[in-house]
Length: 215
Image 1 (cartoon, rainbow, N blue to C red):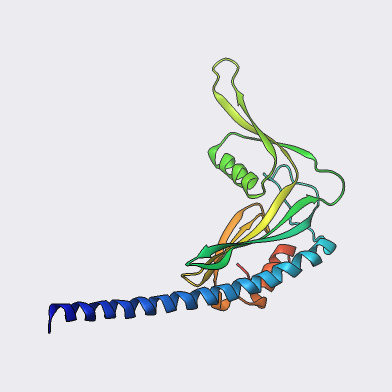
Image 2 (cartoon, rainbow, N blue to C red; image 1 turned 30 degrees about the horizontal axis):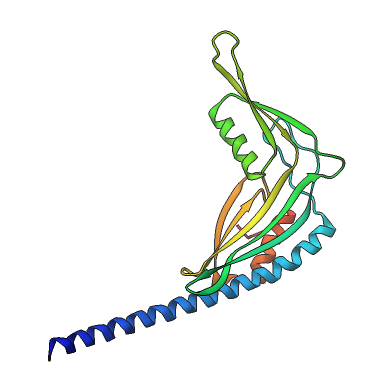
């Protein structure tokens, strides 16, 4: 067998392997896109209903000393964007966002003072999770200038969201929940093959505060 013939055999083997990999990638992409379409259909309809119902939000607060007033979930909106992946148009993300606002009246102004690192981290984490409008100030000793406390003045209103990001190569939909069921960010994932209306029903139950198995 000539060396050229050996090279031809090696090239054919590589082409066959690459062809199989490409077919696998395309199958994964198609399955993930099908799961995204289920999310698209559900998230297109869900805001219409929740904007009428305006479900109550869970009890909110940056600390245990200053609970927020009764809040409602309102102004639900859905957005989705696409991108190019291996010369095909696929979903980049699908996002549901809404406001957490007082049930009655305008948002109140709050103030919280923290002077221990764990408390500071918790308050900052909650401010970030809810995109709470706030101002930060430092309270220092008048003589030594030592830091005594960090003071946050904020508006008792927040934003919540569900961001769904597909991983087409690994057949997974990644969910990022911000301020859903509490002032925190929670990340989870659902295999594309398991994504269906029942799973999204559990997510909807979590959003409106009913018992849910989504997480």
